[in-house]
Image 1 (cartoon, rainbow, N blue to C red):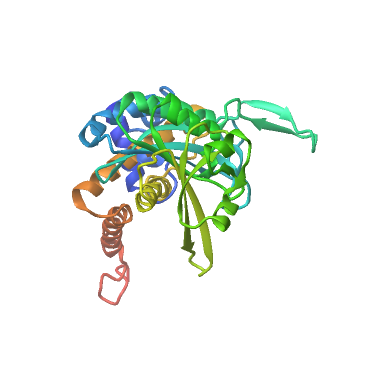
Image 2 (cartoon, helix red, strand yellow):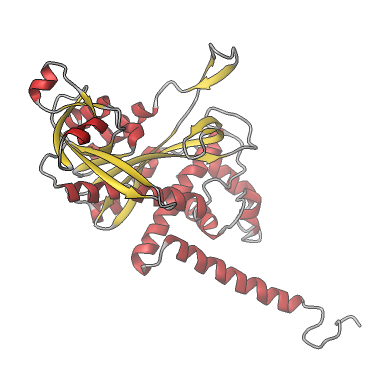
Length: 361
């Protein structure tokens, strides 16, 4: 990997406020760095999660802790006008309630001692075409599910860094993933579950197949912290229920389970709130690191741009640590300085030059 070009391109991403292309990147240096050189850097090889780890591991050494958490989540980067490819295709977006055309990025961040660093990622690839039985139309599918990618990334991270718990959203809260994290990786987890998931209230109930839904548990039992056995999981879990208020003043209910039976209710909630770090990360990737602003057309150049956006976030996080400013505040400072430069250029070009008369008159 060309580290000088990586630093140059990631600085372009952090300083940009619209589409990032090789031509525009070269223009920023008056073509001292040519657009061809930028293109060659993106085409050089397909950068991946392995490259990210080798780039970030010395930083993880500074913040590593046995009490750290590993947060896993995915996000969709809309690309409505790009040609379809194995990584640009249709994905269901639960935030919109329908499928959107774009890129699906699964992220793994390491949160320790107040610092968040990306340590792994997967771009979901739909490399196989099948005919939909209902519509008769051909569609792309992935040969590996997001749960497969989840388990692969958690395994890699467990070998490379210490952490206590894996935190995810409800998408990854399957019994198979829970068993994998606890038995194979030997870590704990905190995950939300849906209200219709089935639990047994004792080992005896589990052996006899006597299950009730999570929602029904709290209509028959008092207290908000219960020891239960989730269907498909062979070890006890702590189940808690939290009622929260939405922005529109409506109320929602969150059910959380953890394999760490020593945790109090408040400790479980505090741990799960760290999941918000990956949401902040995804937001920063899109708004401050130009994740979706590349016109790259090939899988290799698109993948390299994604890697560079992730490395731009690492720089952003280090700036956040050193200055205390938010991601938005850092970008706003860059934007304001750019506005001042633009304003000074307009003053130089002003045809009236503060005289009230055009200079050509």
